[in-house]
Image (tube, rainbow, N blue to C red):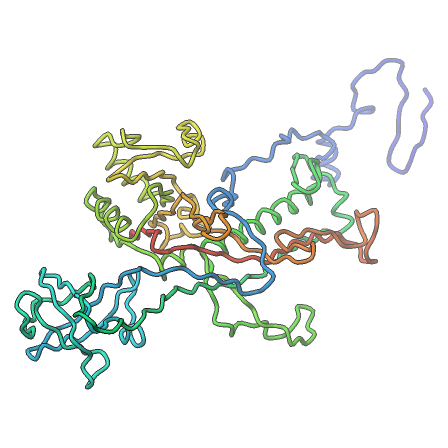
Length: 476
């Protein structure tokens, strides 16, 4: 039998039949014995599915579901909101019938200075918290916050210190007297800034052509067996999460943040001030209503107090309650013990009166005192890689967000409770920018570098309206 020499150390022996012998089949044991420990000749059984051990890790959705969007042509965007038509104030009455104003309550926030100066006018009728009615005769010249008052019941100078809270309920004047000094309406001023958020993903041309066993999906490049697609998908999701986190937990900077070394490439820059936006949680904590539950489970008395406070400050009749897992479970236990879920008073106006729609979105609804709460467990508050990590303050919180819309008196347009503002002008929008650069993968190369770079950028900010209609539950 003839032999054919193929290469050094390798000999093939022809055979008339396909018989498995040590001379015509390669054995993995031979490979290992020869020093090749990879045993790569045998096909591996690798499932093509990439297992999502943490499920869907995206946190986007809240702003898309509850808010709206509007462009802005300035870094700082502003709006004005009306105050209470009637102001309640705190003060004291001394033995000389002098009423001293301590604080003026403007929509739940104490103010002083100029607001105290114009709180009362001669001829005003003031009702004390005890039910006593007083009449303002004149301002005391000795102090701009002091007024001389009389008891309406007998006309005597007031001398009781029983009242500490007061409300202006009207006025009274004698015949042929002059008109009172006019009142100038006051407004609340709201402003916030847009924040520039960026992300990038870079892959070399060589790696972009390396196939893997698992099938991956990219929102930009589709499905395939190239691992760089997974990197692109993860980068896109991380970028979207950063944009959402800025709207939720963003903190407004004081303008002192900067890139110390100028541009990222090391060159100097005069435009290196970093601006950040105040997010929903900061908006609620700094301007809205809040209730501290401590470490105790929430009770029906707590809900009653929340409803009373919402009603006092004109809260919405329908509220979305986004709760951390601990608070959500406490509410489930409380309401299950009373059979309160989807009670007779519950309605689904926000969901087109469709109960199934609310359930499909993961909301459970209940009513209390004419207020409907659509509760949803908010995953962000329980994420161990984000706000749910041990020791983080927000993992027990709950946000009550108004789900109705106000209407602009002038234009008739609906004004949502919250919205996202993004920079745009002359057809150029920075709401969401995505572009590719590099000298690899792309058919039309942008430079000579052997890589593909995926770029993401947005410039956006959070805008909230009427913080008195929001309520934040704090639970430790």
